[in-house]
Length: 180
Image (cartoon, rainbow, N blue to C red; front, side, top):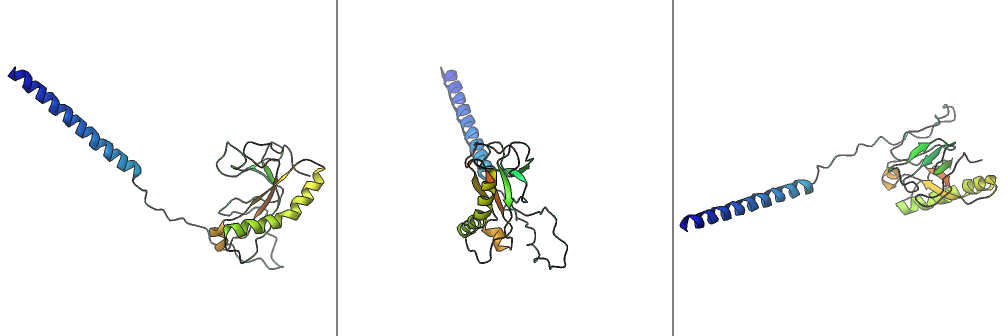
């Protein structure tokens, strides 16, 4: 009987040791998963140079900006309108696409919030949207403005995109050809 008691005590200690090791491993695993990553510095390109003088050559039709921007006449899909992408992407206008860029206004100076940027861009896009919608000869279209956020605006970026879309929600109707 004495030997049986020792075996039970040994198994009990083994089970306790296994439970303790498992608990420690679990705590270490959770700590590693939740450990914050070191902060990476975001390297942003320098702000755009001042407007060219009248004697300068015309700028190229495409720009490289640190935020989505599409030249007028180009077509694109946007994650707020498409379920299959995570960032805005250019698309051929002859195939299904979410929106078409109809204008590229420059935002005015002095805006102090993302709300003010959005409001100013919606106002800048009204006239081009109305003109483009009228040329389509009917149908329902939605303005789809894309602008820099306040961080980029404060760095001097002012280029924006006025888009026109066939839907105002994710997974909605797509444009099937270039706008007129």
